Image (cartoon, rainbow, N blue to C red; front, side, top):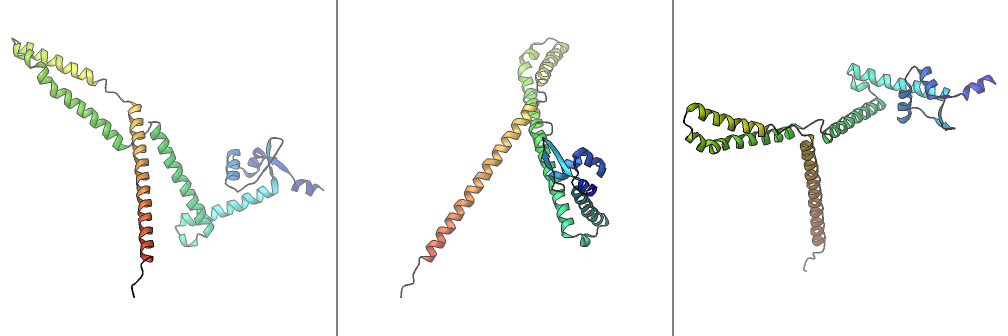
Length: 219
């Protein structure tokens, strides 16, 4: 009788985590990945102790087998399950990294090198335009200056005014977000155009094949 009770011992994820010596978060992750199963009773998620323990042991055996093969560099000893597990893990990691980069890019916490180059080029062009405008702005006043010191002061004021205007050119996340949106829009339009082109090419080829099959030789 006692054995039957033990076999039907439904426990919480926290208790199962203590038995398996892992964290409750890891228990939930293994369940999501299909390595553990549970049931929900009265709003609580419960795990059957013995089947859960057996499933975890099988998972550990497969994982350790795959890890040993990878560590030794002997790809030939990796079975299909090990290769599948590694491929799935690599794919998940790559997707997560890409999504994280996209998120940071859209939030303007990370910028592409080409976007930084675009913004810096705009700053350089603004500085160049301001600098080239100085001679025309001060030419008359400098010509009317009676001393070199007075002329130097006029030029200095013009340069200070230019630098004050350029100081307003500050880092703006909104500028980078705009560049990201414009690039996404261009890529979507480009993909749509390529898709339309391929569709039109397919229709044209189909029409040519149909036209070819409709020809008859004259006897």
